[in-house]
Image 1 (cartoon, rainbow, N blue to C red):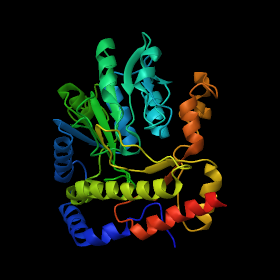
Image 2 (cartoon, helix red, strand yellow):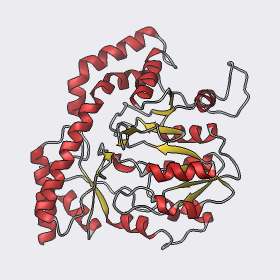
Image 3 (cartoon, helix red, strand yellow):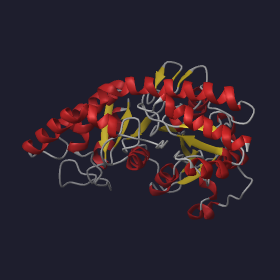
Image 4 (cartoon, rainbow, N blue to C red):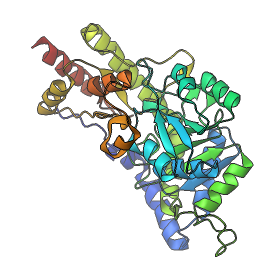
Amino acid sequence: MKVPMLDLSEQYQRLRTEMLAVLDEVMSSSHFILGDHVKKLENDIAAYSNVKHGIGCGNGSDAIHIALQAAGVGPGDEVITTPFTFFATGGAIVRAGAKPVFVDIDPVTFNIDPTKIAAAITEKTKAILPVHLYGQMADMDPIVEIAKKHGLFIIEDAAQAIGAKYKGKNVGELGTAATYSFFPTKNLGAYGDGGMIVTNDDEIAEKCRVIRVHGSKPKYYHHVLGYNSRLDEMQAAILNVKFPHLNEWSKLRRERAETYTHLLNEMLGDVVVTPVEVEDRYHVFHQYTIRVPQRDELQAFLKENGVATMVYYPLPLHLQPVFQDLGYKEGDLPEAEKAAKEAVSLPMFPELKVEQQEYVVAKIAEFYKK
C-alpha cells in the first residue's frame, strides 16, 4: 500500500466544477490584484478569527514580517520566540531588523514554554512571537500576562493553526496580531502562495495594508519602506471556494488523529508518544506528530514500505548556520534539541482512509518488533 503524506486530488475533484467556474470568472473580469475576492476572503477570515481586520499578503512569511514591522519592531529590538518551528519565524524577525531570542519548548505540546519567557526579557525586547505548532495553540494566558507586564507586542504565528482555539478564544483574539499561511499543504491551502494578517488593532491593520503595497498611501506617495506582497486575486478566489469546508475538514482531521492515537496506544503505547491535546485547546491537527526512538531508522523503514513521513524540524533554529552569530550552542535548549531528534509526522489529511492508517501503524509496529 502507498500512503502519501498529503493527497489533494480527492479534494480537488469534489470542488472542481466550482473551482473552474470561479477561476473563469476572475479571468473574464481581468481584475487580478486586490479585487473583490481578496476583500471577501479578508472579511471572512477576520470574522472567523473573531477580529475586525484581515490583510491579505503574498505568503505566510511576509505576513509575519509585515506584522512585526507594523508593530514597530526594527533594528536594535529583540523578539522572543521558539527555536522549534519553520525557518520563516526566525527569518521574519531578522528581516524586520531585529534579533531573535530563542527560549525552549514545552516537550508535551512542542510549543514555546511560557515559564521560560520572563528570564529572556531585556530592555531591548519589543515582542513575543509564539508559534501554534502542528495545529495546537500555545499556552497564551501566561504569555499575555507577561506581555502586558512588560509592554510587549504579541504576534502569533498561526501558519499551521487556522481554526484552533484556546479556552474558547480564536487565533488572533489574544495577541496584537496573528498570521496565517495559505501554502498548498496547509489546512486551508491555495494553489500557490498566500498569507494573511488578522488583528483587532486599527492602527496595526492600516500599517499592514500600506506596507504590503510598497509603503504607499496614496498610490505613488511613499511614507514607509514597504514591499510588494499582495494576496493574488486568483488564489483568493480558490480559497473562497475552500473556506466554507474548513470546519468540516478540521473535524475530519481530528477524527483521523483520534484513530491514530487509539491504534498507536493500543499497539505501541510503551514505545510511541502520541500527541496530547491539552484540555482547554481545540487542536486542528495540521500535522499528527509522534515521538519515537530510532526515528531516522523508522522513517527509512516506512519509506521502503510505501509510507511517506516528514520530520519537522531536524535542526532547531538556534543551531542553524545562518544564526551562528547569535551565540547559541548545542545543549542550550535541550527540549527543542531532543524533539528534533525524536519527532516524526505521519500522513494526515481529511481524506485519509482508516485502512491507510491501520497500514501505517502496522508497519510502525513491525519495525519495533524487529
